[in-house]
Structure formats: structure tokens, C-alpha cells
Length: 337
Image 1 (cartoon, rainbow, N blue to C red):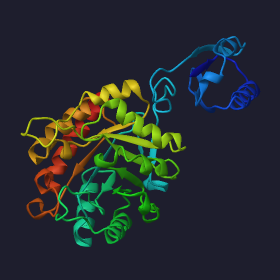
Image 2 (image 1 turned 45 degrees about the horizontal axis):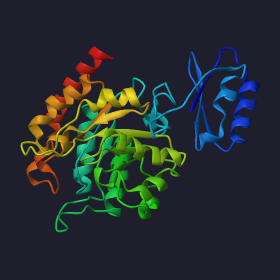
Image 3 (image 1 turned 90 degrees about the horizontal axis):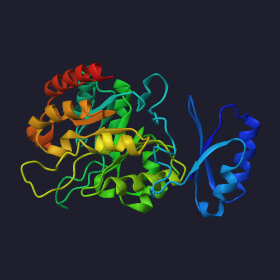
């Protein structure tokens, strides 16, 4: 349920209303925009007499939200959410008109590799560094990542370049190891790992939530809702393609999800053209298309030697290819921003 306040309501009146609503047993979220103040109610709102609430002198209107996702709902929070990743001068904003490219290898392989790639992508316009320390693989015999050592190598790359680091978490049991990670990624396979999502709801970290392999937009937003229900509202959604019967690409990149999510939710959304297509030659056109569609950013795989990469070399760009893609993307961004 959302209640829109009339213009000119004082801070004291807002505080009294919020306190009264909390006594009714619901959680209250106050969203103060430039032209409108909205109070969002989450929980068992059946206890709230909608006619009584709507009849208050300071209330403009009251509406029940029919969608199961409340906190992530655009009607609940009309203004775009801006998520800040990193700290100090190196902090990066995503959403609300702020655009950023995340780039780096699928998996961290060595200090020389990750530091070299980090320097290269930064010089070409990347604002954050991605790199897998824990790797979920379809086969148990494939490279599973360097785990704790990989996290330490990412921290070294951050010290060398100043780029905030982004890496995927596999289990809530690993949360302590991610205390120094700037943006925690939840991969497609874990999008509906609800116990993990609940724990991340209590984490004081921004979360990059990838869409599941065959998940609907509603299911995706409900996963974000799990995190937000725990108190963590710093979520960036990532469209990475959904599975289909076609075998020419790894997945089908659903670019319609970008404007649809922006209509449904206030959360920022970025696009992963690398995992979506599985082919490095398709990353450039899909990056350009995603940018034109209004994405708040991109996450692109870059490797200094894709042919010998331990993970997903076929979809990885070389640093030189990434420089070309980033140049095209920023040109499009300048046109539509």
C-alpha cells in the first residue's frame, strides 16, 4: 500500500503519521521526491483501514499495490535509486542517470593477469573491475576458481588501479570473506537461493543480482525483494540472457527487460552481453544495443589471452577489443543521456 501526502505537510505531521502506522504493525518507508512525498507500507496491510487513512487531512491518495514485489516497485519509490559502489574518490554511482562499465576476466588466474587487465580496462573507460574468485561451473571437473587467493588478487588489483571490485558469492558461509568486496554479485544459478538472499539482506554491501537462466521479470524482482525485505536496498539488477531452444548463442539477450524493468522498478539495471551471447564477436553490437535501450551500465568479460583462458574464453574480449567497444558505447551514451 502507498499513501501520497499533500503538499505542505510538515515534518512533525509526517513523523506523527509514520509513528501511528508503525503501531499498526507494518513497516514504513518514506520516499521524499522533488514534487511528491510517498509513504510505502509493507507487511500485513489488511490491518490498515484504507478509508480512515485516505480520509486524513494530510493524505492526497491511498493505493494498494497488487504486485507481490513492494519495496522494488516503482510506485513505491518513484525516483530512480542510485547505488554507490566503493568509497572515497574511487566511488562509482550507478542508476539515476549514472552509467558505468564493469570489465574484467571471467576468473582470476594470477596476479599478473588480473592487474594487467585491470590497468588496461581502466584506461579504456571501465569504472569497476570484475573477476571470479569462486566459479560455479556446470562440470565438477572444470576450473572452480582460486577462491580466497582470488579475492586477495582482486584486492591487489584494486590497490594498483583504484577500481572497485566485483565478484560472485556462492554461499552465505563465505560472507566474511567478502567483507572487503565492493559489489557482491549473485549469479544466475543463485538468483533463487533464498537463504543466501536473506543473508545478503542484512549485509552492508551493494548487491549485483543477475537474472536466472529461465526466470520471469516478476521472479527476478521477487528475488530482489528478498534482499530488500532484510533492509538492504542497494541492489543493481543485471540482465544476462535467458535460456531458449536456439543454439546459435549461449542465451537469448532480453533487451526488452531494460525498459520493462525501468517501468516496473526504481532499481538500476545493467546488461551482460558476454554471458548472454557466449561469443566475443557479438559483444560489441549487443553492448551498443543495450546502451541505446537505456541500460544503466554493462558488465563485459575481458581477458589478455582469451584462447588460453581457464574460463569462458570464447566470450571474452581482448583489451584492444574492449577499448573499441567502450568507445562506441560512450558515444551512444552521450547521444541519449
